[in-house]
Amino acid sequence: MYSLPDLPYDYSALEPHIDAETMHIHHDKHHAAYIKNLLDALTGHEELLSLDVNDLISDLTKIPESIRTKVKNNGGGHANHSLFWEIMCPASESGSPSGKLLEDINKNFGDFPTFKEKFSTSGVGRFGSGWVWLVVDGDKIAIMDTPNQDSPVSEGKTPILALDVWEHAYYLKYKNVRADYIAAWWNVVNWNKVNALYEEVINT
Ligand code: MN
Image 1: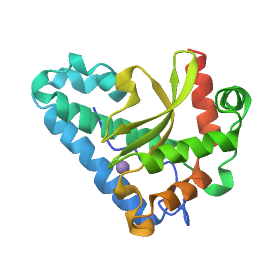
Image 2: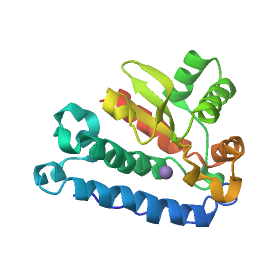
Image 3: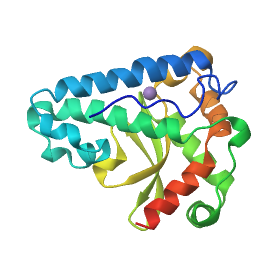
């Protein structure tokens, strides 16, 4: 069964970078709506309720065509936001990439500042609503972006870092200036979690 996970911190924990009101609306309204709409879509398809959401969206061709788009949008919305909350934390606990992740960031992008710049540029350049990701793709890591609530999981890739660039993620505080939101967001990335996710992916 799909349900709204609690935030792993207080709504105000990401202040001043992400404001509490945005967190309330984003988590309690937007994320909750994806789950409600997903459950509505799965009425009559109860066998799909027992799957982990990442398994649900991993191969959309297996989803009945009549509900496929709804599952893509709302299952994706649930999976994407569930990861997004996890990879953020108060700025005082943000940390930095380390171990194998730092090594592979340096190998793939030159250095960490260059990686951040490329990732940010993808976020600013993502036309309309969507997400930017650091994914594990086979034995490589890569930056990618997706429209709407499309998930890299549906393309066989495993996201370990997620940035929501929908206007609902930043508009109350940053208005139309997505670049300022992205610059602030780096302060609240939970690198300990991202490091751990990477270790988990490469060791399984
Ligand atoms: Mn969102």
